[in-house]
Image (cartoon, rainbow, N blue to C red; front, side, top):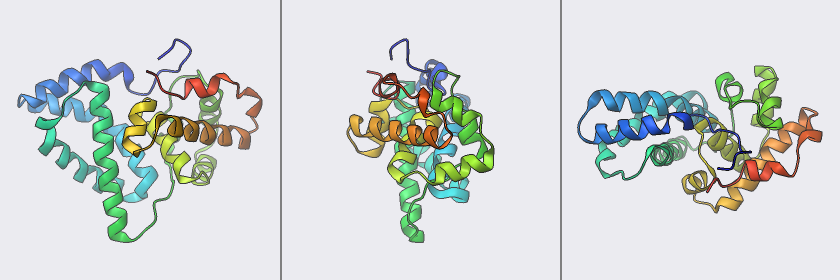
Length: 206
């Protein structure tokens, strides 16, 4: 990631996360609890954006699968974040299929307001709005844009990782995230601050 890109939520903990995951794979239950503590807030926020009030139940199912398959995981802290998001998304889609409910974008106060630091006009705009208004704005995004924004901003994945979770090309996810955040900025009247740097900020970090 270039110096101009904003730090992704949780990335400061990816070194700690990678160490915890490695120890958990060796049977250290305390280390698994550390990994859970680091990953769960973003994962839960993402799931709330897909399944709403059922997020806690879906997250529990996802963590059971994560714990069961942990020995097969290979990668670092950032990789574990993406791997766990992929499992959570599969469980969420299974849940929605069972309920025959089409996925829709929703958000909670923490999802929208607990964002990275003030390095982006889009995020400054999001941080400045009320919870109720934020809910309406995020619900109004097309699903591909909402998921891209949630994965990039709430879960803290970079472009390629978010693309793997969604099964799309990184460029498509970058574009969806940029369009979603720009749409929010336009609605908030901060579109003048959206510059040509935004796609790079929201794009692949590798």
